[in-house]
Image (cartoon, rainbow, N blue to C red; front, side, top):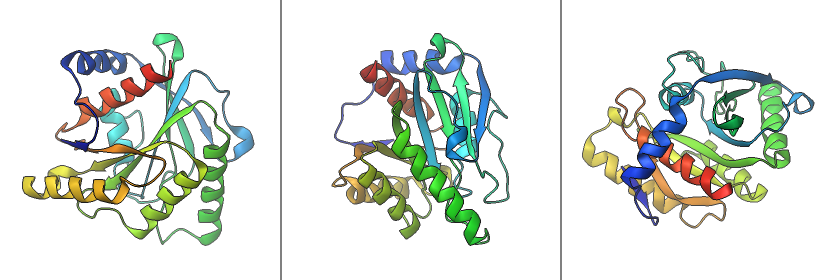
Length: 221
């Protein structure tokens, strides 16, 4: 399910995206500081979101790998930028799993270090095509999410909102949350005018998210 101002994906786009993501993926790099980033190869997309929003599960669902990205029931476990590369297609696509934010039990110094790493990465990565900001469909955009969207707007980094864990709410609430989220982001300068609804457990919205990524990749060449 999507709420957007763009045309829906065609069957050909869905199929092209399926083929793009079906090849082998590998973990290639982990960075805890800005001077330890991997060389820029091809294009990158990044996933950001509150701790325990389901980033790792979504990445695994996209790539059809059960354990490509580590999942954990302990919020705040991802404390570095993790890079996963599509090794087919001349290594043209890299997925970046960004540190989760908004976990209060993590010390302030560590939060500050993560925040600085994220900001420096966003400002200095010229091959970053888009950031996918994951929002828990059960809760919607919170203040901590709004602060991240504001950062992306100021940095002029293109981003798209993806609602996760949609299987945990009723179908009528899914549509409401899509529309409410779209209303919140439609006037933001760096926001892509489309909200995607997903469920890693049920596979809902995964083909459409793949197609959205493939469309951006095609547009950026």
